[in-house]
Image 1 (cartoon, rainbow, N blue to C red):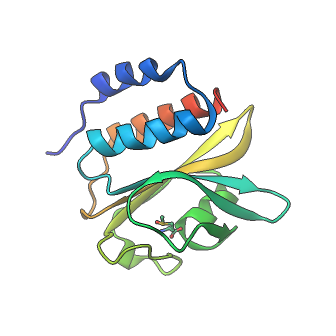
Image 2: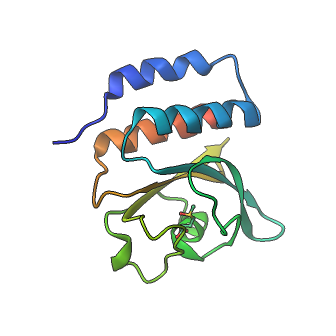
Length: 151
Ligand code: SME
């Protein structure tokens, strides 16, 4: 059973307390990428309410054509509308999906709320099928909260 060292990672997360904004986000995507072998594209998207689109933030992984995603499109765009975590164990089973890399087999998108307002999301693509556990959900929810408190 694959599992991430959740306790250690939640403790390490606190070490980023002195950072904020883009610098914090850059550090966090590198840290997540280094610590979880099946996170193969790790990045942030932020909402542009006026344009009704997601705009890419710091990320680690292959270059993506999807630097802008209209609300409703793909897994990310669906989360922009639902405001809820969306775990996709097998991306090939999804109709409304935007492929970044053919190597991607699964994806998880976790919303970021600042003062109860949906402002963005963390997006993880994995080259493994169905790798995410409750620990991944908890880790990513905590990272989302951490970022929201330090924009
Ligand atoms: N797969 C995403 C697009 C973003 S890339 O994964 C970085 C989606 O379907 O929304």
